[in-house]
Length: 332
Ligand SMILES: Cc1ncc(COP(=O)(O)O)c(C=O)c1O
Image (cartoon, rainbow, N blue to C red; front, top):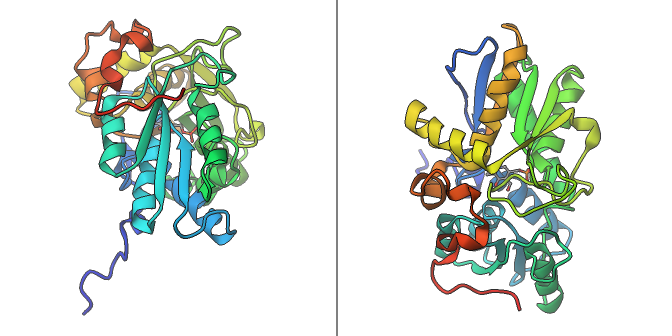
C-alpha cells in the first residue's frame, strides 16, 4: 500500500466538482455546479492551470519566471496557488471593487498585488488590464496568461467543465446559465454542450453597465461578471443570450441564498440564480437547468454580508473598505 499517493499535488484536485439539486419549487430540474469546491476556491482554477501548463510547454514561461495577470481576484488566486506550487513569482493587478477578502487571500499566497482604480473603460492607463500589460512589458521573464485573449481559457472548459456537466446530467441538460467575465466558461462549456446537443440553450449573465451590455458603460460592483473586452474568448456561436443584471439584484439574491437557503455563494452565483429563477418560469418539467456557482460567499463577507443592503449602490471609490487590507500598491 502506498500512503498519500492518491494525489501528488493539490493541483490534481482541480475540476470534477459536484452537481447538486436546488429545491426552489421550480418546474424544471435546477442543478448547481459547485465550482467553489475547487482547491483555489473558484471556477478559475481550471483555466489558470491550463494556461500556465500551456505556457510551460511552449516555453513562454520558464523556470524562475514571473506570472502577471489582471484579475478581479479569482483568476489571480488560482494563479497565485499554482505559481507557489510550481515556483513562480506572481503579480496580480486587481480593480478596487475587489473584495478585501480576495486581496487578503492573494497576499496570503505570497502574490504581489496592485489595486487599481475601478475605471470606466480600459483606455485609462491606471486600468487594471492596461497596467498588467505594462508590468509584463517591463519585467524580464514575465508572462501574462491574459485570460481575456487566451484561447486556452475557453479550451479548459471545453475539455473539463463541459464534459463533466454532460456526464453528470446523463446528457439531459437543456439550459446552461453562467456568469460572464472573460467568457471562457460560457464559450468553452457552451461549445462542448452544443456539440453534444445543438438544442442546449446557453445563457450568460453580465453586469448591466459593462461595455458589452451598456451603451454608456460605467463602473460596477459585482465581481466575476462584466464583459468589458470582446475577444477570441467570446464564442458567439456558443452563446444564445446574454442577460444583464444590476448590482442590486445580484447582491440581494446573494444575501437571500445564504440567509434563506443555507447556500453561501459569491456575487456572480447570486446573479446567475436571480436570472435563473426568472428564466425557468417559462420552462417545463422536462427541462434540466444547470447554473454555475463559481465561488464562495466567504470571499465577500465584508462587501456583501457585513454591509448595509444599500452599499452596492455606492460607487466603488466610496467603498474604501474594499481596498484597505495591508499596503495598497497603485499604478502611477
Ligand atoms: C466568481 C466568478 N464568477 C464568474 C466568473 C466569470 O467566468 P469567466 O471569466 O470564465 O467568464 C468569474 C471570473 O473571474 C468569477 O471569478
